[in-house]
Image (cartoon, rainbow, N blue to C red; front, side, top):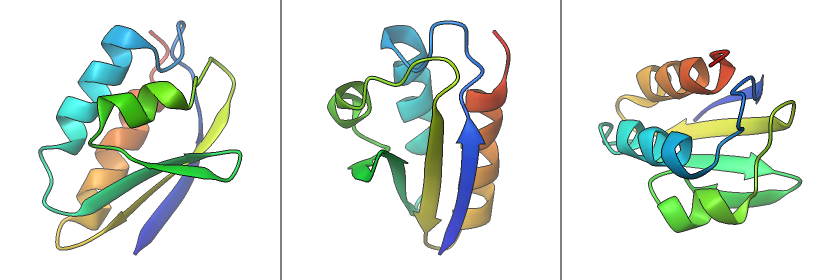
Length: 85
């Protein structure tokens, strides 16, 4: 299992469009991928799960993955969140 804590730099946080892009990217990997905020852990491949976390800019979250391509998944998803857009 690979884990990484990241700070959300997206201007609108991980809401609507950005959340959809995040989930789309997470679904590219065979590993089980999770996003955690304030001890609430959700499946990163679920748009409803991501939206339920209400992640805004500046929030620290933890991305974790477990599976064959876990390192690639965590790296790629971290880049999306840390991008200032």
